[in-house]
Image 1 (cartoon, rainbow, N blue to C red):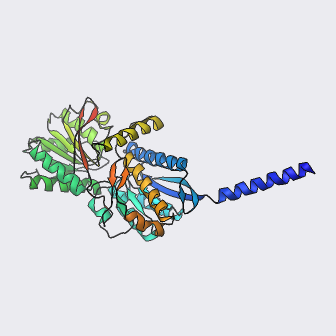
Image 2: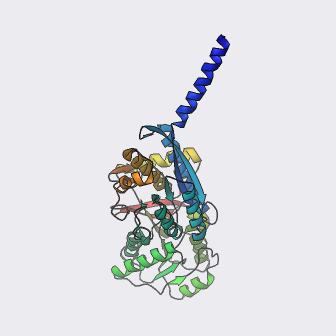
Image 3: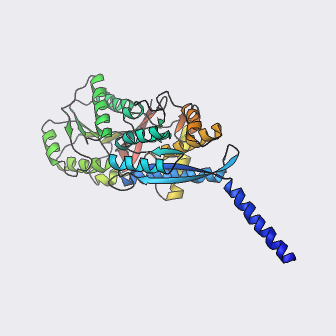
Length: 380
């Protein structure tokens, strides 16, 4: 009889345990980035930033509306391709995610944003910088980095005023990001009183730049700006050296990665490259970023490339809005997310304006010395 009672008690405990587990609130966070293709190293960097945030949220045992939240990451690969990006977005919508962090590229983030908007699902991009992303009138669209107007314009002025560029060449890769940042760079050059050589084009899949570089060589550029990603910038730098083009090389956050020296092999000299990363910390906030980088390295045995800290903050901001709204329901926590202000992240203090853009977004200017990124300055 005692054995039977013990069995009943044990069964009841299992049922109760199951009931307690059923009370947990499952929160699905979608993440999209290119984890295949030429910039897979950047996509994996982003995804690892999301994984670290999810792991820490679950370790904290967050309560949302009186229930313990269990966060799950649904990671998708868009291969930096707009068509694959919209397919990934639809898959996440069908999976009823509570929010999305991504996509990495402007060219995938912009078309995907309509799908999330139609479904009412908040989307925070940690890295899409094309101004159009937040200017479509969607209430679900946010970003935690400065846009190309700020980034390209700052680089354009820097090329004229600080680098003393007289003959400035501009190349872009025909993507939404590459064209957008090149256009803003040209505006920045003009505003600073400089002029640019007529723009030339390549693609984000190209590996041979002999023709366009040979045509530029005759114009004797002292600065070459490239709107595109590091996977193309590296071989371009190598071929510039082979052709004897000794110009300074300037680019946006797409080239501003830890991988660029490897991709360029021996093609870049110390101080030759100047790039800007959308974001940046200084003063007291620098310790948070340094601590994050150390934690990331310990977890993944890899250095942060560019955007992982911004992904991490994006996930954390989303969770913070859910806690404040006491709900993971997108339509309930979305208005709270939109009012985010004064959030202390590892990338600095975060607040959104009425378009979903970060207020007072910072930029960090870098160069490379001895194969390592070297910070020049943080500008706002």
